[in-house]
Image (cartoon, rainbow, N blue to C red; front, side, top):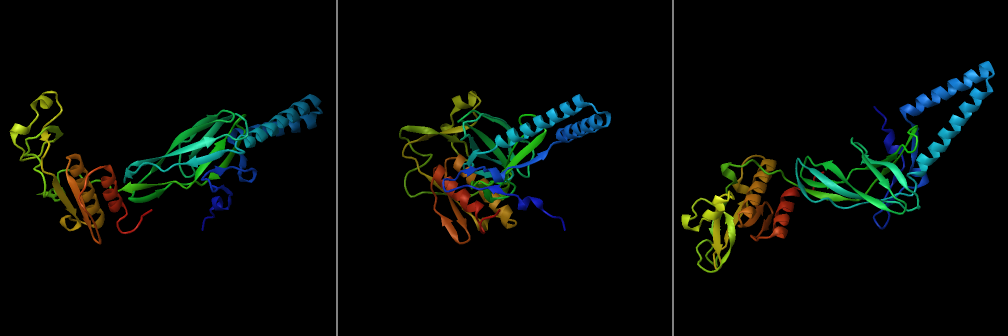
Length: 315
């Protein structure tokens, strides 16, 4: 059984204000590869100076060792007192990457060059330099392979400044989460086509009142409604809509889909996106939950959230 030594390390955790502050006992230092070579050279110089009674060699070796110690102090000092805060990332679809905005702030009045920010278990660090009393923001990309709630993993702030002989780092936990929607199914599948029905009021697509906008063409629309000028400008087939038109509602139901639960959720996600893009009023029917037809960005997010959290929040 392998020993996970990382769990024994101290972590910087957020306070009541949601910010994590790096303290002196949360910073760890180890020599880099160049630091080990440097230490070996200094040791050889000390041995040579003692063997040949070369005082100048000993003086140079002790001078280099003193420079290394001072550099190690500055490396440790470069992380001390940093404040980090993360915001929730915009929702994404499964298989994409969520981008968490993370802000760093300098609180001691020191310039902080050569900072590195990355996921503890990830690769590809972001390089940052903080001015004295200032701050900076960075976007941390986190893979989102599955639907559900996604929490920002533990971060690692590191520094090799100023000499690169040692590497100081600190582990930071920040309370930021986002929502991962199901991945939309492929287009063109028959079971993704929802059944439409007319609303009780209006006459969508059949009105003759004032012009109110354009929507994508759907099979069955009369040619007289097509905007031929938009087609000539290579904007595709679009249909003109007029005030007083009927509103069309579409129900996207669980029982109308096929496959396992994840395939059904992906199909419903695709149908929901297509209905919203066409200006329809989609409604959602899940086992134990029913969302009435509506329109707008808030309704779209509510339906996608229901799909993402179906069956309980997933990691």
